[in-house]
Image (cartoon, rainbow over all chains, first blue to last red; front, side, top):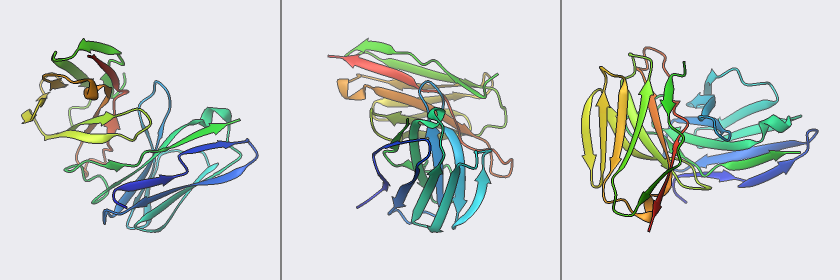
Length: 115
Length: 113
């Protein structure tokens, strides 16, 4: 596989559930990102990892917990979410953190619905 | 005031027309200007990248940056139904300035056959 792959594509979870989103990139990039895309709102940066170290936490509630075990994999662990957390969660990667020359490569996202 | 403003549309045009999209921004430190295209149920994909000011052309696509007016544009010539998508502008400053990539809300474009 090439590019950035996200699983699952769709997820429905109750407010008391615990689930995880997975992202994998096959581009040899050193930086990975989690973004949240809600209806009628711009993409919101959640977390940035550079060489497996978290370098940005954009005031995200603790019910979202990222994990980056290596430079190719990124997880977003979810627990006790709220209905307003329903959104499209996008993973992206780039050669280096905040390296814009070739843009970010995005996955297709996980559509999360919290019931 | 939002850092990046973009008309949400939708913008409906007939096939073959020129599509004109734009964003305004507030931070004069922004140096990197990008346009992404996002199809339904897909992630954004980079369409055009410009550093600093000026024009850039790639096939049917032209990106313009006017830093004095804090205004960027994307033009799509000879539009096709396959150009129907949401177009996101994305802008950033220098890494040293600590600026992150900031996205506009996106403009939905519909090209009718």
